[in-house]
Image (tube, rainbow over all chains, first blue to last red):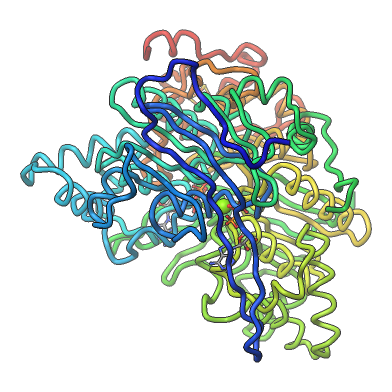
Length: 282
Length: 333
Ligand SMILES: Nc1ncnc2c1ncn2[C@@H]1O[C@H](COP(=O)(O)OP(=O)(O)OP(=O)(O)O)[C@@H](O)[C@H]1O
Ligand SMILES: Nc1ncnc2c1ncn2[C@@H]1O[C@H](COP(=O)(O)OP(=O)(O)OP(=O)(O)O)[C@@H](O)[C@H]1O
Ligand code: SF4
Ligand SMILES: [Mg+2]
Ligand SMILES: [Mg+2]
């Protein structure tokens, strides 16, 4: 078990200092019992450390409830850690919301709550572009359409509101919005899980291409191991708030060291697969 | 096989967009028998969720529907108010694709889970016990504490499992599960699928299983329907479709899956998905199909039987086993 120490990931000679340095992250939620003043502690994240090199790509996989989204939200500055530090480009997250938003962008697991229901798709993209670029009106429209095309949407969708989009279409709008501000770190929390394989393939190919064109690093949270292999260099496996295994993605997927990782691989659906309940009951 | 529990015949749905009605479902026909699981797969925006909402009678306001949806031989659109209430309370349940859009954020998980049982006159203590038991089955061990928490305090997968438990509390005969495991890791997914499998055997639960995971659909459903641009383009035994798909779109979908062990660029069906309302008069897939002919662009193929599958393609027989997108892929690369 290697849960507490810091994992040296990435190539032996990384390209410059890490864009993201995470050390000893811990998050404790207080849960109030109804009708009483008593609170209980829920340790959601415990001693999580890793580095992400510039233009690198790190996967986070693990059991539902193991703390993946909490780690992601802390890095995006949406949640305060109970302990530990997050450095972006060597310095703590800028306090000013706008600067942080530009450097670290997050696409949420649940696109419904992240899009403004009153705003059309185009207006939403335009707002982001106005905040983060110097382009004029027509330049912004062209860029917005380019972004929509990249995620498999187009002019037909620009005047719709989130309510009139399917689940997968909404998720693609969220990805386009995150890309619009040109982030250095893009956190994708189950961002492609709701997409059918064909559109998912388009988005994954786009993510792979962007990494070669612009300097953007990915933190990729997903339960789909094939997808994780597609887009990441390194992976950490979380179980009950801790990192139980870390290393190059290919190595983890071909020769998992941890017992939980092995169970994860065994449960991937394939023809003839029969769903079964966990043997250990936990 | 027993008589169908649910039967859809040429269901079509039109919705108001910018004041005009536009088609989101052209033609969906299928049936589901008690104890049977039907998979519904297909492109994002093809109308899978709308199909489920039409069955529940939960379409957006001013939606227009044609064709028929019948449950045990009775027309669902024709249900009276009280019959509809009864139908939703005792016969059918739905697991929504987007749990956070369908749950009241200011009420606790407990309020949400117990509501239906309390409305049926179950005593609070018994209802609570049943809810905690169901949560344990879907892998949430500390159910007592979770009932006191609020939806925003749950992880994505925990909330999805609360929705699954909520759909099962009333012991429905038909479950419409819209991407019920997208937020779950594969071990938890396996548990949830095992429970649904047991319920099918024990109580004849019927399942409409909407998913984009073709491997999962092949493993847990008996039959599979493939939807594209508001039309079912292929339907048949899940195993057969998984191994020997006939429709070029299905073949393309199967080829687009990323596989563990591969880092190669993912192949995707060339071209952009079309919405139902933009499909021309011909085959809905014609704009992206490498085999499209003049006839394909002018005459829409209906579902017809080929090799014990139903497929909506003019050229299914001649293309059988030989569909490849290679020429097309070479052009687009
Ligand atoms: N605001 C909150 N208040 C209380 N508990 C919380 C809160 N947010 C998360 N938790 C708890 O922290 C734990 C970790 O949650 P998190 O969302 O990080 O999990 P996850 O790994 O992303 O799971 P999933 O794969 O299901 O999305 C869970 O037990 C969850 O209930
Ligand atoms: N309230 C609405 N008003 C108008 N159009 C809508 C509305 N909701 C959905 N649509 C449109 O109907 C079509 C079908 O949507 P549906 O939600 O059924 O897709 P889906 O197959 O479930 O896709 P996904 O896999 O992305 O969830 C989409 O093109 C969508 O844009
Ligand atoms: S009908 Fe024609 S266009 Fe449609 S799938 Fe068949 S060959 Fe392709
Ligand atoms: Mg999460
Ligand atoms: Mg849907």
